[in-house]
Length: 182
Length: 205
Image (cartoon, rainbow over all chains, first blue to last red; front, side):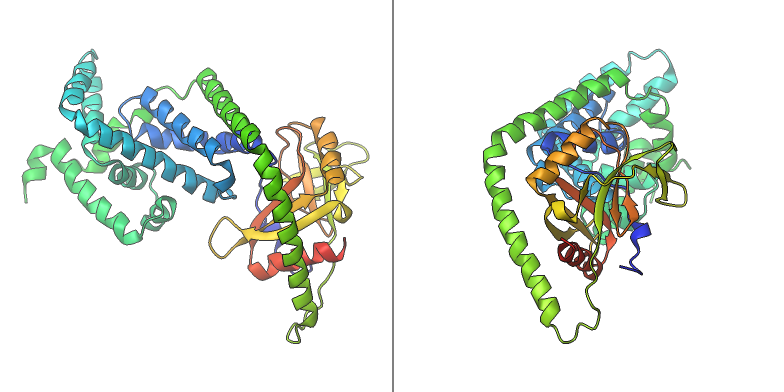
């Protein structure tokens, strides 16, 4: 046994039932998932629903979730982004109607700044969720390209492609004058 | 020119919205745990069968590994027995407790008696770890070992238990509810290291 790097062992959990596993997963990861979810959807309620749906999916598949904090995180993040993709595709069907509704809601704010912020956030809905997740992770969470690739289970090349396309689309959406200029 | 990053930072709702309300979080936690409880009740019958099959498979695999180690001419390293223990631990010192360092920043205080030892292991096996190329160890306890763990940890919720290999604390997770029959030792082991520990555990059984 001498010479084994036992000191490098990380904190972990003991699990017996699916309920204990889920409770431990929730405690360890819900804040991180909420932060990501909030940046992928228009409202805080949407984010809470997305986090809950992610953990409910985990509850149905507790046995197949890999162990270890970063494996768990990657599994949950991928599930969350996939659920969001499904929602987004369904929403695309009724896009025009819901956009109008959202902007009306945003316009009820009294401060111009609040309206501007909400408008920008609503405009982000135009980005496909995986691309939006890549942009959020890189620009707001400041993760590296390889870190994002590992988390989402895609190649670094795909991450870079999403980043460059996402930035172009964002520039066009958020800043039309500069976006059109070549 | 305003960059995409500036615009995102300016509009980021996390910077101006209140954090997740504690009551809402607790409600969500209960919903999720209840969903998992329902699920495990439904699949319990199947999971017992699966466990029995997995146990049989683990014994065969362990026997094969030990056998191949014994017969392998190229194996210059003699397999050493590994002493496995789980003990209750405390975050605060008290009379009769033994201090143990886990990392440069964390110590726990160990209870003198082990709850379970090698004799309580039904099986142990190497499983994939957190990252590719790294491995963890899954330890299944015997029914009596599981019962001892359950009884000891039921009164120890919110406090740590320590897993020791050869007297060194390798991890000290906090008990969230009474623990039953399995333990996962996660770490950045190579496959060879994890196999040496697993084999060592079975030699000392």
